[in-house]
Image (cartoon, rainbow, N blue to C red):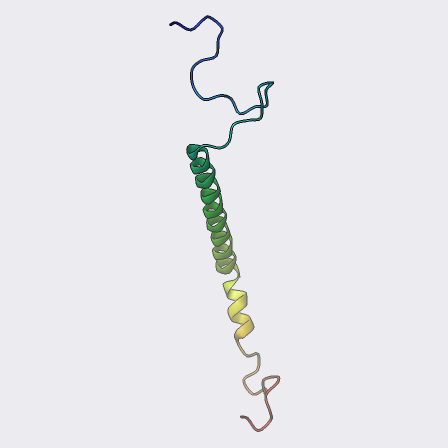
Length: 85
């Protein structure tokens, strides 16, 4: 039996609301594609975050090291008792 001209091609029904009822539920393939998309999006965001942190650390490492160095070798560090621990 040949399909009439202008009729819908064979396959699953469209997921749009029609006069025939609600849209069809998600298939296994739909769930797989959605899961892969979300997983890949999360991995991409984590990688971008890691790149930003790495570049920020590389650009500001000299300031971080300079902050940790004592300014005066004879001065007592703040918060330590005068006699030492």
